[in-house]
Image (cartoon, one colour):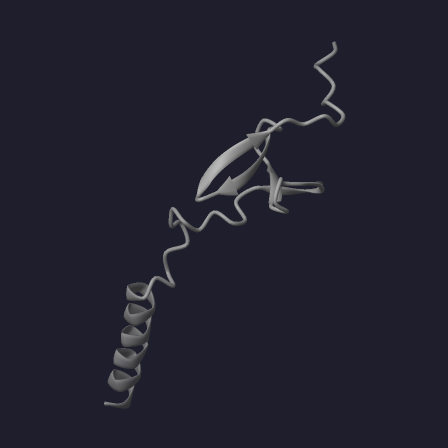
Length: 80
């Protein structure tokens, strides 16, 4: 009986957490840390600048990516 009570309480807590949104890590609005942060650049109003997969710099505004120009060192091209 004691094991059943413990099992039901764990099940209740996990279902409550999922229902309240604690278990959904891939929400559309949860994009605050989705890429590498460029520590040297800052957005127009002090926003964090992220580095995309291909090296593009962007900041988030209303959940959308706003790309900015990058005037730093470019990656060297493939030389063989």
